[in-house]
Image 1 (cartoon, rainbow, N blue to C red):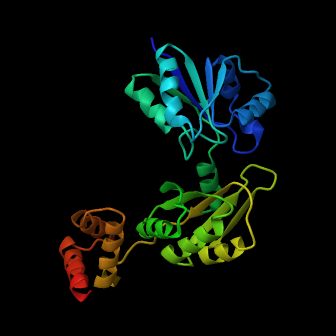
Image 2: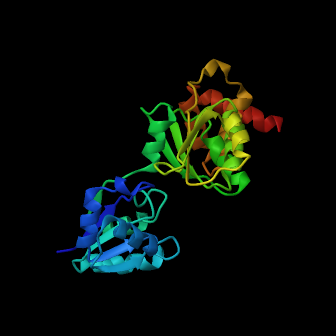
Image 3: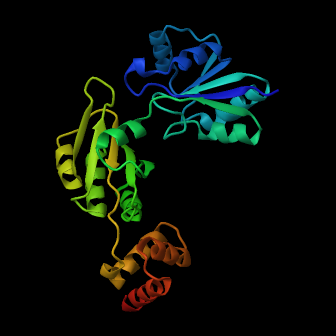
Length: 281
């Protein structure tokens, strides 16, 4: 019999939001793998429990090396609890490598649902929630960030991003450039904490607001692109959309097919637009 891997959600701010099962799992675990062991101990103390199992760190810097060790413990029958600093493991946090390795070895996996900054920000944003996508952190370099955002310019679903305080202004300006300054968005910071704030408005406005400095944990929610009218798309715009996808690594044939699907323009017309742009260049 193999052991059990338990992925447990932790509070994103307010400790009392912790699911009751979290305290039970902290007590039951043979091994607690924590993104930050100091934070884990503070959380355990706040919950009034003292883990009896072995406590090890599991963060971005050591997860490649520590994953095999945890898998061996699981194969030996251990109950391993994985917690991160806030929210659910694997969601822009350590966890994916361990889950994938556990699946490959046939280890049982379960989860203790908990708070999520993604869903909390989405619900508070006031933007459509029927369809959405999570994009995590944008690339740090301006050029790569711009390319990623241009790829998302036609995304019809509401988009959710994580961002750091020192990059939020640049990211919002890049979003305004890629999506248009009038695209509706919401910047949610310090969710469930004392200084929680949700700032809503057009991207250009939010970028100007962020210039004064924004502190805390930040989640950005951006409205999806409005439906496209194929008749308004020029050949130059079609060629530009294909070029953006090619820059991101797609083959031209795949890029043309994708642009045709997202715009409703026949593939032949998109192909002709690309050929015309190439000849003009």
